[in-house]
Image (tube, rainbow, N blue to C red; front, side):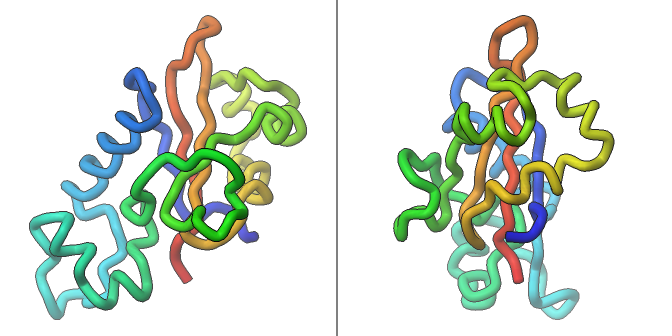
Length: 149
């Protein structure tokens, strides 16, 4: 799998589900997603309009809007599409040398975050997320994935 096409670092808001919902709302509002029609058609004003567009169904939004829920289990399963899966402790240890990643750990990657985490992506349309800690408590969530061509 290639490096992540999209990544978002957001505050931890009590749960991954809540953070994902807030992020999706934030990304939709500023039109921070791929719109295959260019200037030919106005972008939708509601998420259900966007997601019912035939072009989007085929090509995706190339953003977190392609991820609808938090998955449980194996991100390589057939039903993993459109879900995000937490990076496991074992994956985290192998990729980053720790199971409790901090903002300092991310900063030490010095622009190599995509290359460091890209191998954790299991397919197009499947996201991953990583909890970032501060003072031993969840502080942020890094969502990353690849959902476009």
